[in-house]
Length: 266
Image (cartoon, rainbow, N blue to C red; front, side, top):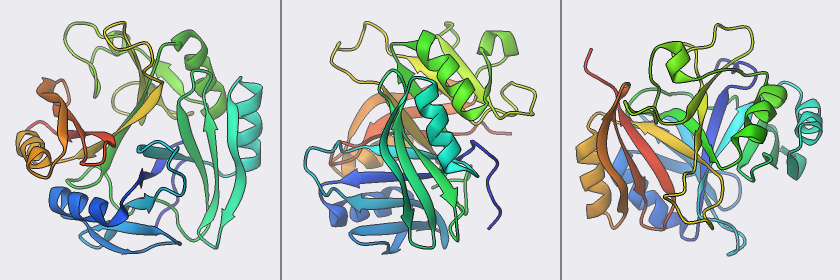
């Protein structure tokens, strides 16, 4: 398994009250199979390739949510940059056996993300294909603080879609406030982007916290949304077209929110 570029999204997992129910839901939705992970968790596989993990919540106060991890070759230095840039370290670096070292942090707006320094487990074995991770973006009310945070912590080069002359997952034709992140050393724009930043508008309740939204690629967005409803989940944003395909925002049957993206036909 190849190593991930510095600061690239490399892993996602979901914390659930009922692990077995989660396996049934995502197995039926994405065709995932599962194998036992560390402790009360399960690795998710798509066509035999690692794509995610499901974990049973150890504390009922924890959110039922998908989390994303960014690759780092020096997790101690990354944690230091989080603090220097005005973020908060939630979990100090801790070794996950021979798999690697992880930490959890929050940006100045409160959105939580993970850091992963790979050992034997590099991260995804499959992405940007149906049933696997394809995109992530943070939603915040404090873009003035959050934008420089990610640029400093991860070295992202940022560009607004209008400046790039193209859209990205989560944008629309109406000029939604959005920013794309490209890794250091690349020309910023949609061709190199690995994630992005959106804004929580006044249309949403003031109590809604900042959060990361995880996208999974699918072959048929409308069919995936219908399957989620059939499995007991909910559709938060019905399927709609964006410059990069057709997407929907969904909730599983335990309340974890995620998005699906059907790429445009070539």
